[in-house]
Image (cartoon, rainbow, N blue to C red; front, top):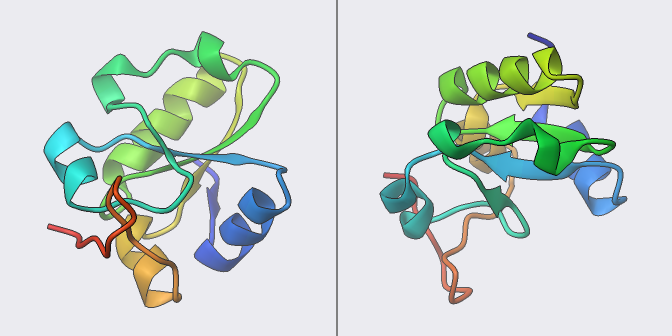
Length: 107
């Protein structure tokens, strides 16, 4: 599955060219997620929601995000997986927040 590095992913998200979709479980999301990401657990992912949009999928380390991007791609969605997941996002300087805006953590 094609991947995208965190720097280019942030550029595309900030430019409105793509949406970041976090496919982790709810408790992982609640602990912290990328700002402006959408939460769609892997089992609830509906490709129809993203028709005509560019999507970057993520999870904590990249495995689930890659599976999500592959499923979306097979359904005709323009999808890439965030290389290294949110761990790489953080290592590259990306923020992790909770829904209330406070600093989040990766569990």
